[in-house]
Length: 428
Image (spheres, rainbow, N blue to C red):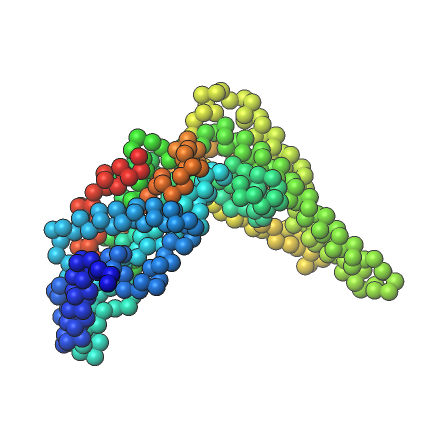
């Protein structure tokens, strides 16, 4: 006969007792239940073993799953320890693990990514009977080998042209595609403190409609996961972008010409289609006025900046416009009243720059204009992950909460008592 571990038996007994209490408890409102003892059902004692068996399937091998499970269990243990002097009331905490597709860093390091999710399921009063809510508002999460809320700085109209090899889907992009705008308040590189997306003082007491999230971005002690992009690196990346933009628009011109030629191939038989083809050629090309000259002008400007500035100036961090904008305007291409097209331009500092030479027109850095520093992943930070992709290289912790007594007490207790140093030591 298979022996059942005593801790498992204790958990089963406690779960049964809690269920009996839930079924037996009378109430007038959910407020009556806030002081009732709470409970934590950890990952090892998940209520759905069939689901648990497949939590980490995305990680592939049994060795990867075991390693990820061990790391997530350590994080779960640290969270439990943070509540050693905290009396849990009014809810059931339930922990689950999950695996994800690999996160590729700097185009070459494919890190195994896996998460922890601990939802807080509150007691609620339904028809004068206590129940455990099937949804959660407050939730603690850990993301291993990936960060959330960290987005690339720029958008591109057709990513296929911005792969390392144009239109070859190899997963690696040109440098400009991977640059990140980083707000210093996120405390990424020093791993101290937290970043909160919505200040608590702006939320009404008791509001359940606004979710606030605290983020802790943890890295190896003494190592930088992100490095500033230098002015030289940014300017050189722009030159690569201009060549890709040239390829993209040249292909668009060919597509327009081919489409229009197909409409115009039999003017005698289809005179109206022929006229439509002529107009199609003019209208669609009008969206790209003087595109070759504009790209060449942008390129010349950047090359001049690179040539005329000192090494010291070029090695300073690239500070750029904090918010990416799309500028659009009408352009007249003929004499008729409706001879107008909308021209759209991405990632320009001003509308004037957009109209002058288009996307990524360089008009100077934003050091004294409230700009943000560009960053990129530090490739040296991830060396070794090619041999052991499951090893944790970066961990993000988040605590999402609502401004209720339970939500605030959970997040404040975690903030004050979680052993962040022990977590960082897992990254060494």
